[in-house]
Length: 139
Image (cartoon, one colour):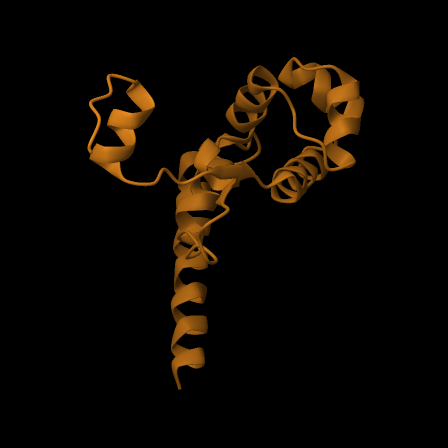
């Protein structure tokens, strides 16, 4: 016999089906932070101060441990990237790579040593290179 339930999780399960569980890809987050840190010539301690997290948060991340939600939000905000960039579904195969220019554009625009015209030029240059690489792989 079918039972009636007002439990929100039961309703959500019936309406939406199984809910995907995402996990944080700490390696990808750490790599993105390291690349941006190196580009800005910052130490890990300086990066932590600039982001507003403790240096121990950075150490835990380097050891593959997840930051707390507030630290994660601050880190992705500092990177200028969406939090989704660093979430991996446990029940999914590999995600399709996001557009490279879309990923790099916020980083280029955030650089203090590039003006708007320089950033646009680099975006165009990278876009042309990406199209060439895709065309070569298709051959």
